[in-house]
Image (cartoon, rainbow, N blue to C red; front, side, top):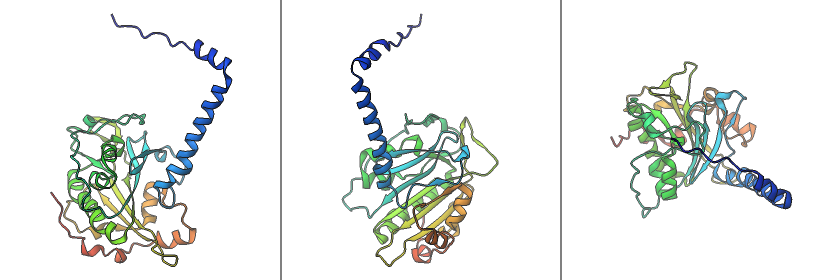
Amino acid sequence: MARRRPPLRLAPLLTLLRRHPLLLLLAAVLAVGDYAYEVLYARPAMTWQGLPAAHNWQPVTWTRVLRNDGFLVGWSDLRGNPLWVQYRLRAIPADAPRLRRPQRFSRDWRALNSVGHDDYSGSGYDRGHLAPNYAISRLYGAQAQQDTFLMTNITPQRPNLNQKVWQRLEEVEADVFAPRHGELWVLTGPVFDADIQRLPGAARVELPDAYFKIYAAPAAGPRDEPLLLALLVPQTVRGTEPLDQFVTSIDRVEELTGFDFFPLMSVELQARLEAAADPAAWQLEQVARRPGRY
């Protein structure tokens, strides 16, 4: 016979609060203080030009911001996907430790739609990192690496995308862009079309049709402008395509995702920089055909 859970006894707690009402006030103050710290300090310190903001209140763009070591996630319980991830890279020190890769991915207790490692097994899709294991682990350490293996950082990617084009982009941003520019901010996430498809065996995970990467190199001086670069990569890639084939504008990515990126940037600067699709300042052509690891 199953053991019955003992009833929750609230009477002693209510009695304590009646006798000591200042405890309730203290708890409320601590809760408000913690939320204020999260929203006003912790999250802004991990973003550049503000958190992505949804263009409207449609449920498909609702996200909860999850703060991890080294990166932020905009998680969608409705779609079972991170809709965006933002992280900051710099040149990786030569003596940065190379940590052993975890064997499994972990559920995130913060997710209402709790996706697990085995939900992807046998689906034909890879568990694709948005915040990359390699760069995040070497720059931010062991806990940050563990956080990249939370399923709230994972999205279904076809093998040719995940193991080839995506791996090449992660290598270029860590080994070329970040050292060249000194500081590199990365925004990345999935793109969905109107034809909703689900991960085989896990209907609570929606299948993206493409993925975006947005790179931002902050202005080097007071008279300089930041450099921005956007790429849009479909799920159907072969994996050997030159990377400059995927260049697009940030305006196009915003149109497809329903998000306003870099909302704290001046309207004039956004209008000019986000409409451009010119990779020349990034010298992308020099690494566009760089082979992948696999």
